[in-house]
Length: 79
Image (cartoon, rainbow, N blue to C red; front, side, top):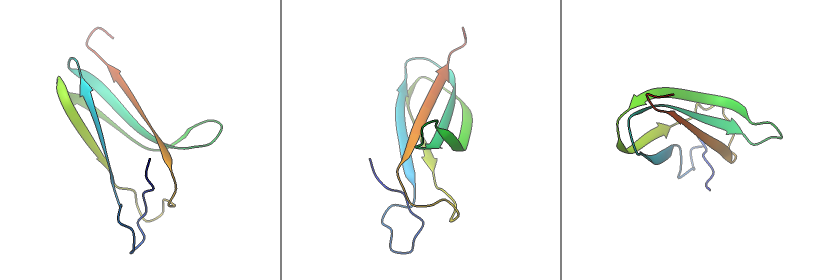
């Protein structure tokens, strides 16, 4: 876990989300607020190949500094 903040004194202004795919897939990465029901604040959907992957999330200055939940969903060709 780490806190992401756009503040001038912040050492961490972006999160690099790394994962591996065993086969090509359509991947949706969501960043959500950690509430009773996760509420997405950012989402990206990509068609990615097999192997190591990474997605970078750099929130706008409007996003408050806090801990967020990252959700990754991968769907292969078979569905």
